[in-house]
Image: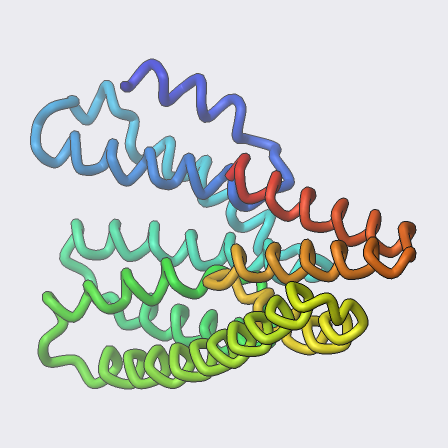
Length: 232
């Protein structure tokens, strides 16, 4: 594992995608656990040096204001790395909680930002933060955002289902009007599969009425989203 970490690090460093660095962060978390339980020595694991490399990469991406989703994902991973270090060193995690709250606030409107993974981690923190007002405030924000995103996605699913019913009945113009409405709702990371379905159904409807150029654009878009999800 330790030697393979070096190989993965070489591949990830310099990437423009926060997903790539996030995978390296996940390996670092495993490495941290392995060292803590004595499976790998601290000298072999080079935990601090490797953490500094990660921090440098995450800070670089966090400053890319022209790529808000990517930047926010990098910042959230930086905070989670800080969280692991703070817990291990028995330091206060209040600055991390403040940072996570800010990340969630800034995620509003960023439909492709993966809120689900970070909110799950925040929920798990409740096991060790049983008496923290800062954590309680953060969890309230998690609840609000989850409710908002769920209601948006659920509404999108209902409209999508109706559009599919229209298409199956041969009413090919109606699905285009219907399914075009919820696509921004289904673009939320938690509803990615439904988003791809909605684009494909629109493509089929366009094909059925003879607008092949529009159908092609939809199919290419769906394929691109699906492939991007696959390589993650």
